[in-house]
Image (cartoon, rainbow, N blue to C red; front, side, top):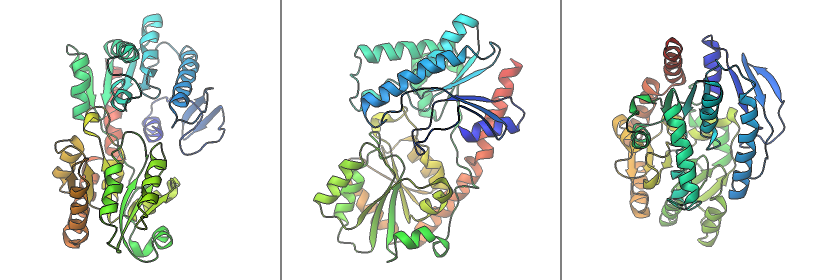
Length: 384
């Protein structure tokens, strides 16, 4: 969102961002009001409980919603609101603003609710809470000017909710910035030398170790490959599943698995480039509900990717189109282990896939390419 706001401001848009205090990587009090790279930022009050706990996420989201509701009415009624789905009901603010003051709004869907929490049992599928959230968001979809989603499968899922208004739905992918995420050669990677002094082959999962990723199959593959002394599995990040993964590794006495915290942004290129194979995953039930944005950064560092997902997931299809890696079943650790060995033991194939990944990224998902799509999209709305 920072990239998008800054690029819109550079393109001549008057951009004002309303957000809560940071809770993800940097957990410190930021200024209530500031100007950053021509973007005006206003931070509203909200609870700052642990987002990995259900009650914490709920209270954070509710308090943020109330504060942002008040902030909306400090904007001009002619201002276009762009509302994402974090917190989940934020798009409903657009609905209220549209009803009360006829203010136009666009919805950016990062995660599709209520399907996402229902798929992991946080709320009951088709229960009362599910139905309330679904009803409020569907009202918001219908009232919006446009809806931006991150994938074609997400477009189809949203389209089922508003079958007579599918013309409103537009796919604009997320992206990576080639000035921040790029291949770092092993001999120049100081982080790699520190983490992996023995020069082992690294299989890496980097990102949120959360409820929505099929991480268990990855560590089960590590168990199957623990006799391979030349392989090191790295899990880089934090999240609700991290204690579980650490417990599995401890019980299995895995000395081929290491856990690292999130790396600072200035170290991201080095961190991702440590991988000989990058892993990412999406549970089959979440196809069309989320789109893992880590895909774009993994393509950008030019290493082969194994997508742990359904065979026909959109991420797997992108990787096939790019010839940038392989797909593995999220319920089959033996298949995943076999494909890891195949890539590590065939360096020429791996190198070619990595090169393909980088080229595909440059042609399709680099920051300037995608934010230009946003710029053109918003100019069209202004014309209307």
